[in-house]
Length: 271
Image (cartoon, rainbow, N blue to C red):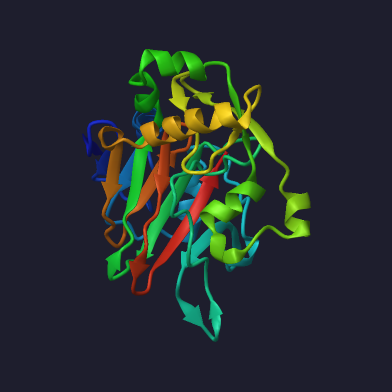
């Protein structure tokens, strides 16, 4: 197994590995360490089976499905299908997901450790995925602003995010409002494995901040969100069929982009 950096602040490409084969203990430890230190693993030319994708996911934590069970892979509830393909008049997967900067599972009490995406059918155009290192963003934040952000908590509202992330779906229903309670997280996320600090301000929703008025919170949260995705902290991944990406949700933000043509990916999550 060989590894090489893909950008100055985000990720490594892992080469000379077949994820359908057994992975040695040493290589497992190397992959785990690389993920927590670089935030992203890029592994190309894989034809991974659902069973091996589940097994590989468990290297980074406990595999767990937490959203959109209506798009799970047949016989594999741990795997979420992301796709615009329609069969027998029904979509086989979720066609639109995550087109704004975000942390996966930020609206949960427990933020997932890692997300994995396996590209099965690559789109014709578009569809790149961008990542930004929130630990680098924190390390380079101006001191004056850093002092303002310390010890603050943001209120993550899935109900509030609907109008910003999916306006075409309309406001949250009464049932969704009951199912989606607000969650509070520190703006400064301490990585559970390394204690490194990341700027966890989220991507685009003007979250409320505990102990601050809305007029005080809005300029601060907006600055932090825009700072978090400055070009020097980011990497844009151009997909190839057979790619597998693994990212650390305590280290990087990410966002998808629009695409054309049929596309099919399998997603898993580790907690």
